[in-house]
Image (cartoon, rainbow, N blue to C red):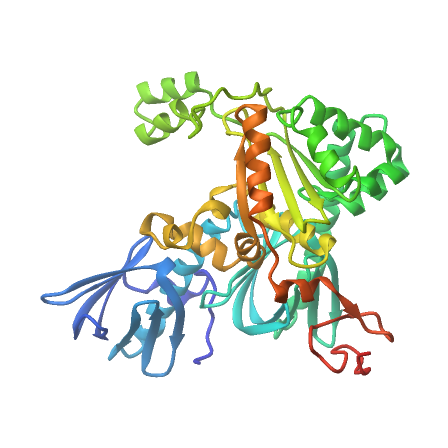
Length: 479
């Protein structure tokens, strides 16, 4: 690959890049000279008689060589050539537009605090991928943006460790991923300093939120809870209770006054009051219908948004809905039934969200799976459609952004595979019946049962992959 600046437009060269290019295009539809232009969400390839629009979300890989630009999609390969120096300019603009689409899918907001170009290596569930990438630090996350579908958003609240070692930046996530950033030059130290600064700000934000939830929490208790569940994450309720009883009592009170009040006793019964996880966040600001009616009169509100507000309380259920209370906070519970190898996920969101209980199969150790659930909920901002949509529905054009997010978030892919059903909060009897049906229909395959029997290295304690003869960390022979 040609080496050049892959930034977002700070170079003098990019200021001279034209809006429309001319090049020779070869694709499954046609082969001819084309006019090439980049729109907000897609690239346009216009020949004399044929016209092709490719959504950025359909791109698997963007690859540049000395003489041609190759775009890989699910439907086939597209090559662009005979452009000379302008081929590099096209690549830069396409890569930048592609990244902006990915960041929108990741729901990243605000201006990047730092933008770097380097290389990365990521290890996820024993699988490796890596290569050149743009690296951007934001207030609450670090984004790795390669010119392919392997982009990752790393929330700082899930960051377990960050170490500068041998001119690389090694990151470890609580959800298991290990990422190594390299070839950052002098900007490596700048990244480490700014990452530390953002982690300090996250810690301060966490402590301020804890004081709102439980004003009587002590400083030592707050410090412990901050390490256990930074702002944006959940944690095991039993550990919270042991170290910060007042904070646990405040969460328990919030749950009993929330939309989960009716189902809370059953959830505790399901797990015997042990090993369940919970999280709490302030409710997002909601646009009022009155405010949006005023905007509509001024011509500043789309009709589709108003329609969404009018229909916000609708649900597919026609039964008598269990009474729900207005949400002042966002609450979630992750509750296991270890005997049946299932987990119930209960959400209390805004008053406009239909309440439901979601059932998943537990494929391995419960704590590992609970972290993955928590990571998936954070990544999707509690959008339950990301889990409910079938593979066929996810492939529809209108769900392209959801498909992109799932593809780039391993925790969401895992959660979708383990989804067993849901129970809408209609009448209590109907809800319990739906839960029972979901549980009875849930089964663990023989291969998944093997994963439950987790083995660890006798020397270093690292988790051993199924079937391996030697530890991948220290080389000790597995027993």
